[in-house]
Every structure is written in structure tokens, then in C-alpha cells.
Image 1 (cartoon, one colour):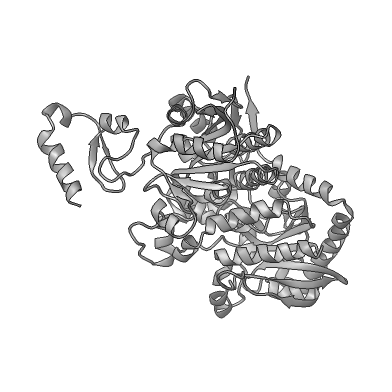
Image 2: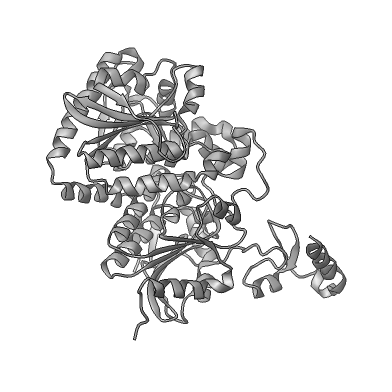
Length: 271
Length: 280
């Protein structure tokens, strides 16, 4: 992969390139028969997360994705891909629907983080994310997650508990945005570039730290340079993984899913 | 309001010159001060507004568990430096020396009025009780032990959230702990969380919000995003009581608010109601 020598900060610039494909670009090229489903059945329909049913090379699947806008109007509508609690609750509703009908779940992560606003707090952002994490851990159907661009914080993890996680080559996954990191640790948000480069947020970092299993190659210069090619790469990967995970007895799959997260952490024990 | 005023006056006029030199606690909620000795006698509860201040983990265990019943798990576990963050190992060494803790949580078993339970207590003196590898692993092991031994779990939470210095590894502790909570729950185990000041960020968005019963101490802070973050990004002025326990109970996220002096008896009764019995 030609991008491997780029710094995390340079890759973040690629992710932020105008024209970087979003889920709305990918769906028609990867899936057929997509039917979007709205709402959490409690409060409303959050536009920062879309979901529904579709076919992947003929196989029925459930798609859940964070939505980035491609222009200012789209971004206003989807609130810059920062979901509200009802977005996460919609995601859980659709995941449960998939479980009932034995469909694999495919999650696309593309968010700077969960919405940090007054109404998000009032409606239990923390509870909504926690619930998704716990419920996805034991969801009795295969789950594959792919980080498309930014995977920021608990807002990303709420769609990130899965059997296998893939990163697009330039995508990043982090505990908080580099800006937030610099602001929290150094009280200086302007040091975001420095933060980005030491936080270990690249696709290779994720594989090394046991967070991701696969890196999906992007076209030269980034995904925006060849939408057909990157869509084909994602489709290939998904078809392969869904066939593989669907063959496993579900209890074995759940045990492996638990173990995948169970073993992450670095500590020593003195006696 | 007049009570507060009266208390301040009382303090000023009755205070001897001796008391004036004593260290004081300034309440972050009502801004009144109280002589630190008195505050400690009250188990760190503000006498003016009932704000429940931060307790160390050892003090919390003393206050909650039967005398000498606490038996600690994993006392020698210390964190590595997964993303090679500059200064992180030194910072940890310094905190270990200062607090006598090896990280931000104590876990183990204890009895409460004779009923055995798994218990975890976070300690905000250690890096604002942020969750890194050690906190995540200890909580996970505590839940796994409880599941294997059919024990309930009580978690006293307090945290600034994920531990930035461990990067993505700290984020993954949210998944690890929540997974262990879910398996304990699916096996029929009772899990009670007691939210203490402050419970925020990645801890709110994982095991703290997953209790079968969620208790909070009065006037404590509970939230996902911080107040300053919300005010600066949303350009919104927030109500005074925003994210306090009483506010969160009103919004439907807290079962009950319980004063510190009643937590031990409340826990004992709730354990008993769920069929956990005294050891003979």
C-alpha cells in the first residue's frame, strides 16, 4: 500500500478531503435493494445514523451507518455525523430486527464523536451508547464493522462491537479527536497535529493493537480518486467475511467476539 | 437560602481565631466553606447544601462493607504504556507513591450486613479515576468472578472517562467491561451501580449505565460530555442543576438518590430482596 509512509496527520487530511465518499455514495455501489428504515420507536429519527435492509450479492443483510454530509446542507441535516441518543437507539432496534430474522449486520463507522449537546445529555447519550455496546456483544448474528473515515470515541464504539473490524487504509480510530486530546491533556487545542501523530490512530496501529483485523486498500491518493474501485474492495471484503462468519456456530462466534475485546489491554502483575 | 446565609454568619461569628487558620473545604455546589475537620466528620458531605463530596476508595469500603470483610482482587496489577505516551509511566509512579493505590479502582469481595458481594470502588485521586487497561481488566475480572460464583456486583463509579494516555486501548475497555456486565446479567446476576462524584465520559457510556439498579449520591455530577464542552460547542447556556443527580433522576436515568449514611443499609436491603442471603 503506497500510503503506508504517510503520517497520521497527513492521512487525516485525506479523510477530510472534500469529495471523500460517504455511506450515501457507497450503498448503491455495494448493495442492491436497499430499503431505509427510520426511527427509534421512542423519540424520533436521527439523521446522523441511517439503517435498513439490503442485499449483498443476493444475501439479505442489515446496514447501519453514520452519515457524513457531502456539502453544508447535507451536513446540517445529519449534524456532521454526530448522532443523538435516538440514533443509537435506532441502530439497536435495527440490529435486534436483524437478529430476529437471522441477517448479518454491517456497521459503517464515520463520526467525529457522539453529539455533545444539551438534548443529547437529557435523553441519555451515555446510557444509549452503553446499551448498544452491551447488546451488540451478545447479538446472535454476525456483525462486521468498517471504519470509513473518522472513528471518534464512544460515539464510534457504539457501532464498533463486532466479530471483525476493518479500517479503510486512511481511516482513523481514536479515543477522542486529536483536537480534544490536545485540549484535555495539554489545555491547548492548537496542538492537534502533534496529538494526532502520537495518539496511534492509523489503520496499522489498530491492527497492531488488536482493535482491527483488516485494512482495506484505498486507490492511489485516497478513496475519492476511484469510487468504483474502493466500493469493489469493500464489497469483496464484506462478501468474504460474511460467508466466513455465517458458517460458524453462533455460540462459538459469540465467544470469539467476547474474547476479541476481552484480551485488549496492557498491564503487568506483581505478586 | 436563608439557612445558607445563617450558616455562613454562624461560622464567621462563632469561629475562633484558631479555627480561622484551619484548612477549609469550599463546596463546589454552594460555594460555602466548612472547616475540613468538620467536613471529614460528616464523611465529606457539605453541611450547607448536602453535596456529597469525593471519598477515597479505602474510606468508601470502610463505610460500606462489614469490618475487615474486604478481600482484594488483583492488588498488584499495574498498567503498561500501550501507546508510549511521554511521561505516562513517571506520572503513574508518582501517583502510586502519593495515593498508595496501584491504579484508579479497588475490586474484591466483601460482606454487607453479612451478605457476600463483589464490590468495586473507583478513586478519583488517581488520574481522575480514568479508565485504562488496569481499570478495565479489574472490572472485567470482578464481573467474571461474580458470574462464576453467583454473586451480585456493586460498583461505586467516579471517573473523568477514558484514560487519554492509553489511546484507543482505553476506549476498548468500555467494550470489555460492558461485555462482562452483559454476561453477568444474562446469567441472572444482580448488578447495582452507585454513581458518585463525578461519573462522566466513557464510564457513563459503559458499565456505569448498565446497572439493574442505579443509585446516585445527592448533588453529584453525571454526564457523557463535559459542561464546558457543551457550552463551547453548542453556544448554549446550561441550567444550574444540569447533569446533577437530581436532574438526571428527573430525566429518567437514575432509580434513586440515596444519602451516604443510608447507602450501606439500602444496599443490604436490596441484596436481600433479590434473594442473596447472609453467610452462616
